[in-house]
Image (cartoon, rainbow, N blue to C red; front, side, top):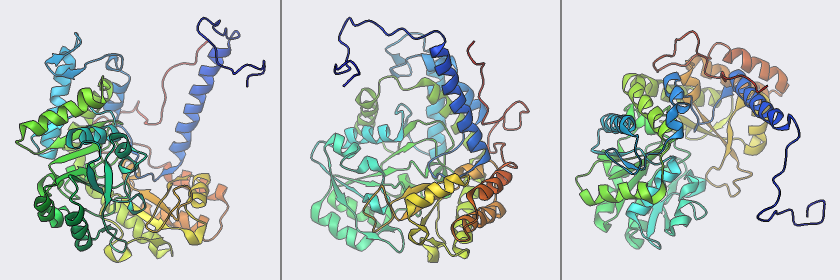
Length: 453
């Protein structure tokens, strides 16, 4: 109830609330101040979120360009709005770059996020009540494949693969039996906790046998695939690949669809799944930033992808050497940008992630096999994309492991660890693997613009 006893809802025609003099300018100052504080915090912290990365200066410039204010529904040359001559050229170039980078015949850059890309694929490949193969959340799947996510929205029913906890991948023999028994229409391969390639090649004969189409969610490993450091789903048995574009591919927060197919009907269904299926305007500023990011990855991506994986494996080894329970130790911990650490002995995923954040190390709690509560999981997930992007290497991964050990095993005060983390980060605030990284006027964490009067 509102203070006057009413419901608090205002009807049509109610008077518009008049702000006090200076109130809204103060609100704007506060918002911008909080954003500056946020930026300053990350500038002094060690960022280890596997799903985050930094945008290059030229790509970032496009996010605040006039493209942000415009609409371009449809495809290049077939728009529903006028004034898109330059947009058509940018998008055509973006599509060309995407097809070149991923060596495929089809691309669509209109999905505005990875989950929206997944919804577009679901619309293209499935009908409500279809069975779709996927992994369980506790085995590393993304929430879009859950009943409360995109699967539920489309009304498809998950068929769960068997899981090999030691190898952190699909148990192929048992999954073959499951697929033959229930015959899902589509099989999704892809994870949010993505340590090792999926055994698509091994399962391909079974998919062909039951008539299931392979679909790969590459959100986390898109840059590693492009850089030749992971697997190649479009050559291994998946006809469609969806992804977000801001993780190991350091682009804007956007989405993409990719396919290697001569099937005109599949292309048409994917295009209509993207528009008008799940997007209207497709965020032209982000699409243009993606075009720049794809070009930069073609120039610098192989080295970046190699070092990203190298750093993740080095961090896993260094933490293991400090007594942490890093998953998949016999297999080298990971072949991607991500490692998973079971931290039950250190207090559990939720408590450990908070302690790390208080000490200037940004990570996230994460479900691990055997966990039942996403709010109180037994693990944390760590990723190397952002620290690699600013130039850290194997030596720095060892130093980060020492900070973990100091905080979580030796009980060093968090303020001391935070100071040490800031000292380490101070040498790594310039982006690498992109054009314009060395420009003197550029710092990634800067915000521009004056406060309102």
